[in-house]
Image (cartoon, rainbow, N blue to C red; front, side, top):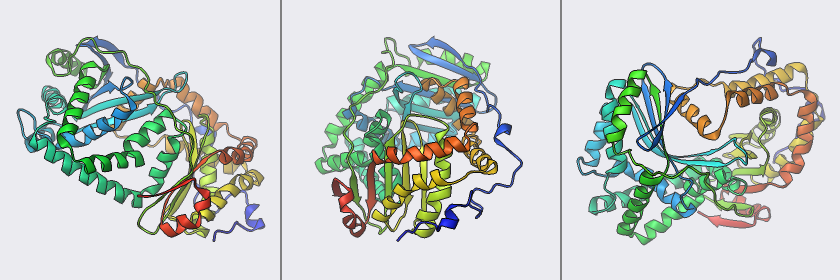
Length: 469
């Protein structure tokens, strides 16, 4: 059973086991304002909004269809569509041929749903169906041709498509059951966050327990003809009517080439709708436990919290100065931590032998952190470690996607600089005050656990519902 540090241990200003003791000359004053985002250019072309960011070398071409007009119950079908496209024939090629052509001409190609929380007033949810391509500039014409064929012209009806549905859904169900055992903390956090933000709600609908139940229901019905007709109609509705933003990272020559290609491509369509935020009603908070195989537990406590960059320092201190010792070293879990994101914060454990004991340990953390003393060196290490996570180098493709996200979410360089300055200005007084207030915020939170039958039943009083997956 987890035990708290002795009083003399709790009085130590910082742990000395190497987790946060960083051998570097940096201080918070050295961190600067961070990298700036290169300004892009915008224009209207072939019914789409075209964004261009100059770059040399590899070319990145991303197509974003706005999903603000899509009904919540259809979002799961769109997510399923992104998973079956690889298995579908087109009128010109078999699935295998089309995949070979994509591998030959494109460095990377994927279709996915992107769900982001904006920094505009009201923190709107921006939902996009995204086609993302990376390629060499000389392959641009082929990329537009193959991307259009793959996204628009693959066949969603007929015997081949129906066989693909049965195959893909069965594999997805199996994959999710394995992931519940391997990454239960991520599914628990997604489930709990759904009560507090639209971003969380649609993410849970399209990738959490709700999506698993959706797959199980489709497999039980096995009406593949009806599924194909549904996907076909929904795809046509989105691709022909949703606002389309085309984002190009490439040279001026590539831009000129794309201007000549788009009007005659499958992506051209006039009369598209205006983009609007995606919305869906939030459900009341419920404490839930899900029984899984595997003999380990994943415990999560999630609570609502306004977005503040300086709270990332508190999350780092909680993770390494309290949870690491009490949950991992004493409690025996493989991992643990606190995360602060848009609209929510949460504590989690990973491959944990405990349930009730870990939630008890969570509850004692704020008071311990508030009672500690923090030196200037401690604060520098906390802040530098936190900023290092923000400044992790990205590959060019990921950098392009991040720039697109910031565009849709209304995130400016000035906002990023202000966030960074607030983070670097954290002092002992603020840190102790945030820790002292954390207990009250956590008390309003939701518990979600993925765990073994014995551990869940021993802690059943913590939950409103218990479900076997």
